[in-house]
Image (cartoon, rainbow, N blue to C red):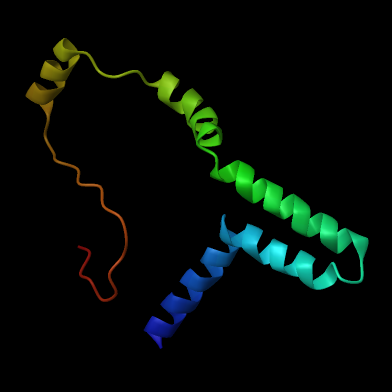
Length: 102
């Protein structure tokens, strides 16, 4: 049961977040576009947003303010931080069902 809930949650998230939401909207627009003009507009606008969000320049434009806000650390500041370090933080991605977290 727990695996089904996990799979269902991930499937729902895949359709809500981009690019899944654009694909769902394109499909809905094509479905309703045969009879209604707004369906064709929905499909066209969703396709345009999908293509624009896939461009590299869009990604660079969205990431630029975050990268400029925190410049790289200098060599001298890095040495000070290394001397005071008390922990190692490991950042990972994903989840494993049934894993012992603590």
